[in-house]
Amino acid sequence: METARGFYFNRKDKVFYTRPIISSDKVFLKDGFKLLSLRSRFNRFLSFLKGLTEEQLTFYTEVDNTNHVAWGILEVTGGVSKPAGIGRFVRVKDEPETAEVGLTIVDVYQKNGLGTLLLAILNMESLRCGIKKLRYHVVESNFGMRKLLEPLDYVVKLTDQGVMIVETPVFGNFQDLPQQAKGKKIEETWKEVTFNMERK
Ligand SMILES: CC(C)(COP(=O)(O)OP(=O)(O)OC[C@H]1O[C@@H](n2cnc3c(N)ncnc32)[C@H](O)[C@@H]1OP(=O)(O)O)[C@@H](O)C(=O)NCCC(=O)NCCS
Image (cartoon, rainbow, N blue to C red; front, side, top):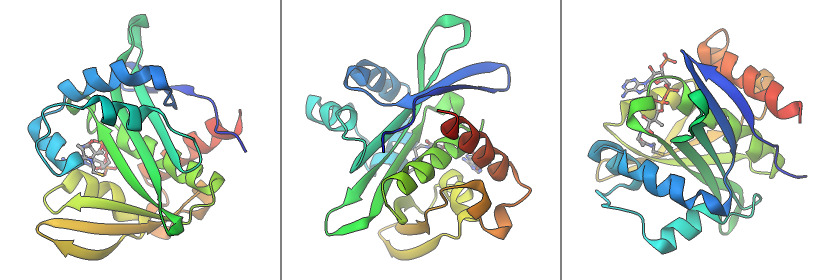
């Protein structure tokens, strides 16, 4: 089954567009990376990366939509596209039903629900790809990411040098969400994403 097409959505007074990443998105990745604080870079890459190499840009944008799935969010208010976030999963070699997730929201857009939206998309895409478990590397002090995963039955598998390896089951539809997610913003977002992805 093919990946869904993109869709528009609003948060506060801004308009956003989310869609699968394509190879010509390298420029958005480069620009978006420059807008990340040191803390965000560390939380995402577990090091204070100064920039993305050509090799990384190729890896991050030339995806097969089955073993490596990536979606980006652009802010498109007023007709100008600005990079706002990106989320991906990569299937783990030798564990075909598990994938590792990387999620980044540009600092100025954080705490607006964009991380939750990308997470919902990645869960639905996981279902499409036969992935049953998602794995995250979360810096212990990354309370944003911990808050995001809290309603999703997350289990800490290991903590090593301040980094937790966390796993959640895949919740491919809002109806599957665990009880503690019901009636919360996360459930609304899952419904919004289910609706938009099923419409395609
Ligand atoms: C972690 C991250 C993805 C969260 O994305 P986001 O768009 O800010 O998250 P949301 O707005 O969807 O927030 C989800 C919940 O977490 C809370 N939250 C977000 N950032 C927070 C923070 N820094 N401290 C405490 N709570 C936070 C939100 O208030 C929200 O709670 P609510 O549902 O009760 O309102 C984003 O901060 C980020 O990209 N950070 C840098 C890279 C990173 O840490 N990646 C994760 C490693 S895989």
